[in-house]
Length: 323
Image 1: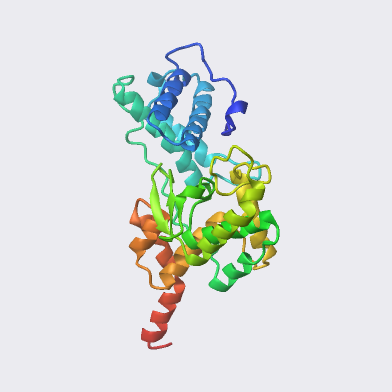
Image 2: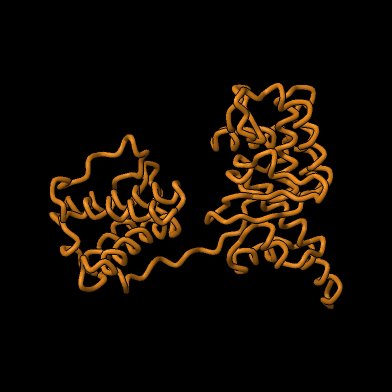
């Protein structure tokens, strides 16, 4: 099974000289996604999974969109189901789902643009996704144990403390924190503007006074030592004056969680889960949690009602006759 690699490592598309080949149409489809302003990561992910499907098809002499039928797509689905990774593990239902969704979207686009008379993927049934709860959630005491790990006497330590406080206070996604600018903060109103979050949607969320205080302290004392002209306003900077990369951000937070020695593992998303769960336990309405997290569907947010066992335990103790 071909892997989705970085674009610079992608192998040439099969039958690239045929303008009617699957690869040629895939390039047009990817161009359309970019014109429609889909996120770069979304486009790259879709292209990677489509390349894997096209390579699979080429091995079976399936060259053009017209060669693909529903039974062939079901065959590809079976290939994903039986595929084994280097360590012997199968692809999870979610991983199979992720690889099939771009294929289905691609053929829907081909049909809509009259390349195909009918959509062979229109009735393709995707794998049912397992219902997964967060692997770990911190208690308030555990979160505080992580907060105090950075050395705030160093510029990068003060920066890291501010990052941890922002994650804990707002539940932002990793890329949302990376994308913050100084002017996104409203100290007086106690809010932060998250620009171009998931789905390229802006949202304004409240930030606690403690987190705002640490960010303000970082901006005044540490950021001037990290910034390199010209200053584009990026809030959190490396020692080279650049934006923090996603992988570095994950490792940074993970290292502090590990250093706290809590017996729990996680990174940026750990604080997203923790914020939502602790707010819910504190009595916050699930709809406010949804707004904080930027979830489109309330169903996505409702998983935290399953994680928040504290309230359920209190109800159980108060009402069950055999308590």
